[in-house]
Length: 162
Image (cartoon, rainbow, N blue to C red; front, side, top):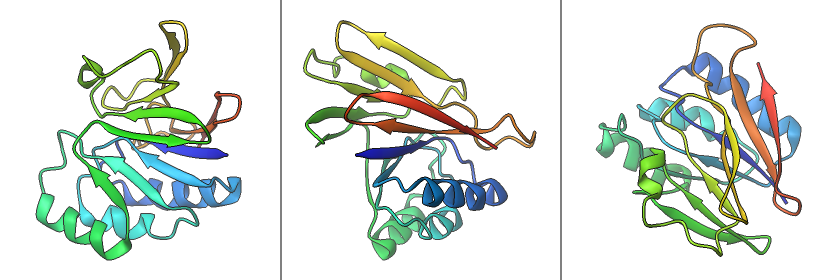
């Protein structure tokens, strides 16, 4: 199973449309948004994904009423961090701000996803946890934006730059 990872879209609708195209072309089975959607019209564009969308709220997701309505309308799954799941026999935790991992990372966690920093991060935490943030995706500089794909069988990551 391959999942898409995106963070901090910050209502950059042009980039979100490109992100949807990239994930659909990559045939990911699920997409995880690690927060800072900002406005409901971003979710309306993300409804074009061929895969279900899961995510957490970020510190800039203050328009909660409209975000919650769009999430419900499109059948997405979002929550306050942390979001946890077991997909393809991998324990996954998702937060927005990496400080939200505090007290939540356990040895049985295989994949830890976060956003907030707008910086690429790929490292091993402890002995078994891959920590990943694909970095910036809402910038205006072509080629410097990125989203990620994680293969849940191997826990290998891939960046898709645009």
